[in-house]
Image (cartoon, rainbow, N blue to C red; front, side, top):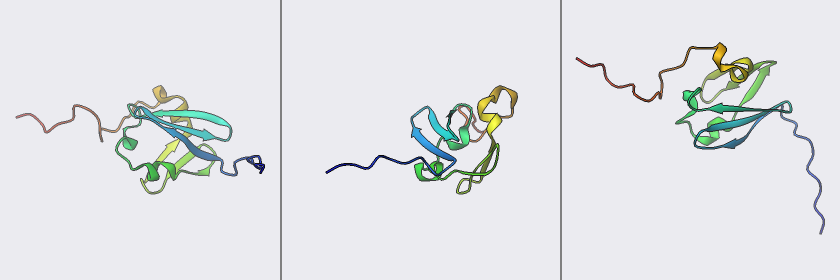
Length: 97
């Protein structure tokens, strides 16, 4: 019995790995890492919802089940996009009185 070689992916974007630190995307042949420390919206998301990513237009990623939109440039150069969500951030507690 012989195996057929795998073909080229038809999806322009796919999640290739998820770890405790973040996840990797393969986007049109480029591998990108999204660390949870810089993209906290994904930290507590169900794996299946992270895997469902779309590329609605060039340079724009969308996770419909999480309602998250990201510019690809914000992944490549997060230092240029200083706004970080407080959702899921460590140390956010009730305000002190």
